Amino acid sequence: MLKVRNTLTGELEEFQPLEEGLVRFYACGPTVYDYCHIGNFRTFVSVDILRRYLKYKGYALRQVMNFTDVDDKTIARAEQEGISLRELTDRYIAAFREDMKALNLEPPEVMPRATEHIPDMVELVKRLEARGHTYRSGGSIYYRIATFPSYGKLSKINLEGNIPGARIDADSYGKEDVRDFVLWKAPKDEREPRWETEIGVGRPGWHLECSTMSMKYLGETFDIHCGGVDLIFPHHENEIAQSEGATGKPFVRYWLHTEHLIVEGEKMSKSKGNFYTLRDLVQMGFDPLAVRYALLSVPYRKPFNFTFDGLRAAERTLQSLRDFRWAVRQARCEPGSNPAVAEAIEKARRDFEAGMDDDLNTAQALAAIHRLVRDVNIVLNQGALRADDRHRILDLLSRFDTVLGVLGEEEEEMLDSEIEVLIKEREAARAARDFARADQIRDLLARRGIVLEDTKQGTRWKRKTSPN
Ligand code: AMP
Ligand code: ZN
Image 1 (cartoon, rainbow, N blue to C red):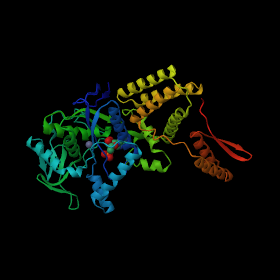
Image 2: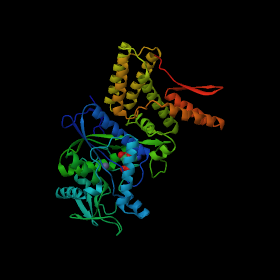
Image 3: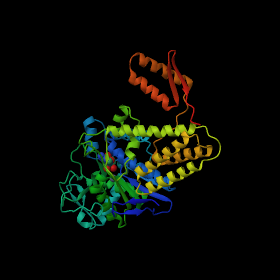
Image 4: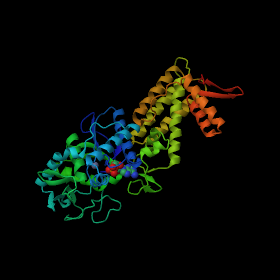
C-alpha cells in the first residue's frame, strides 16, 4: 500500500484514488520564458517518479501539467527580445519538451497552455463573482480572502505575520487587503497582451490558470496536486480558495511538495543567478540520465544539495548499474536456478517496493538495487549464476527501471570494426602523449567487455568472457 505525506494534513496517509484504478493528478508546469534549470527539474523528476510508480502499482493515469505562457516574466522577455509572446513561449515549450525527453520524463496525458483557456478562466471568475468572493478595482478583479474562512489551511500561515521568501503578487496596488490576490489583471500599458472578455479587458492571474485547467481536465475534486515547496504559499493556497470558493467542494485530496534543490545553502533560482540548465550540464559532457539519477537519489521531501562531485558520483554509480546488467546478460549459464539468487531477487523486489511505498523513498529503493548487485556479483564471480536466475534478474532490473528510468537502452555488442577504430584513436592519443584520452578509451572499451593488451607488436584486444 502506497503511503504519501500530505501537506494538507501533515500526515503520512494511505493513498486511495477517488475512482478505483484511476489516478487524476495535476502538477504545476514551467513558466516558459527561458530554459528550465535543474532545480525546476528536480521537481519535475519527482513528479515523474510518482507518475511511474503509480503505473507500476497498476493504476491508470490522467495527469495534467500546464504551461504558464502569460505572466509578467514571459511578457517582459518577449518585449525585450522584440518578438510576440506566442513566438517566445513556443520556443521555450519546444525546449522544455526536448529536455523532458533527454531526462526521460514521461509526457503527462494533457499539457494545456494558459492562453488557450481564457474563456474557461472567465467562467471561473464569473462563478466566484456570483458567490460573492470578488471585488473590482482599477479594472482588475480581486479575490477577497476574508470571504474564505479556511484560507491558510494548506500552508498553515499566520496571516498576521510576514512570510519570508514567499512569492507574493508584485502588484498589490488596488487591493483592499494585502492578502487579497488578483484574478484578472487590467493591462498596465497599451503594449501588454490582453483579451477582451465578458469580465473586462485584461489577462488572467497566475493562480487562476491552475485552478481552471486542473478542474477542467480532472473534475472539481481530484486526487493529487504536486509542485515545489515554494508553491505552497501563496500559489496553492490561492488555488484552493478559488476552486473551493467556486464549487463548495474539496479541491484536492493529497498535496505533495518537493523540497528545493540548493547550491551552497541557497535555493537554485534564476533570480539569484546560481543556476545550471540541463543544457549547461550536457554541454559539459554529463549524461542527462546521470543528472536524472542524481536528482532522484534523494527522497523528494528532503532538500537536494547540488555539487559536481555528487553528479560525477551519480554518473559512476549509474555506469556500474549498466555494467552489471551487461555482465548478467553476457554470463554463460548452466540451466536451472540458484536458490541464493532467487532469494536475493525476492528481497530486492520487496525492499524496493517497501521504500517506494513509504512516501516514495527513492534512496531506499536504490539501496535495494545496489544490494542485489552486490549479492549477484558474488554469485557471478563464483560462476554459479544459472539461466533462470539471469532472466529473473534482467526482468527485475527492467521492471525497476520502468520507475527509475535511468538505465537506458542496452548497448549492442560492439562490432570488430568499431573496436579497431577506437584502438587506433587510442594509439594516436598515446603518441601525442594525451594519456587522459588514451585511458578514457581503454575504460570505455573495458565497460563494453573489451580487454586490451599492449605488446611490442602493438595493441591486441579480446572480448572478455564472463566468469562462467
Ligand atoms: P516555475 O517555472 O518558476 O513556475 O517553476 C516550475 C517548478 O519548479 C515549480 O514546481 C517550482 O516549485 C519548481 N522549482 C523552482 N525552483 C526550484 C528549486 N530550486 N528546487 C526544486 N524545485 C524548484
Ligand atoms: Zn500552478
